[in-house]
Image (cartoon, rainbow, N blue to C red; front, side, top):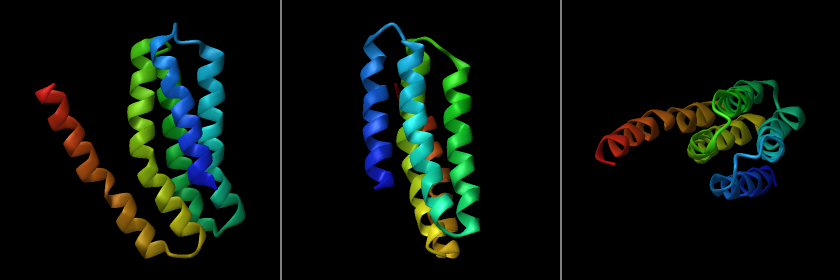
Length: 121
């Protein structure tokens, strides 16, 4: 269920890319994404708080950074990469800490690929 809420909220935020960067609506989407990130930690094991707070904090930081169209685009980009931390949170909430760490480590190649795509684009 957290993945569904996170994905739906991310899709909602992505619809704001063409608008005027409506701040209130952007925060509604970020709240849904952050809530979905934290929910497994609330219901699961304490180790799930680490990836959950990393993801929620990053989303809030990104939403605060740039209130314009570019900021919404960056929020969507980071939100897509956030699925990795969401999966790590879900694993950790079930006590699968080692697997959660391996999944979270997938952020490294994801960020590397984003840097390569940025140079090519």
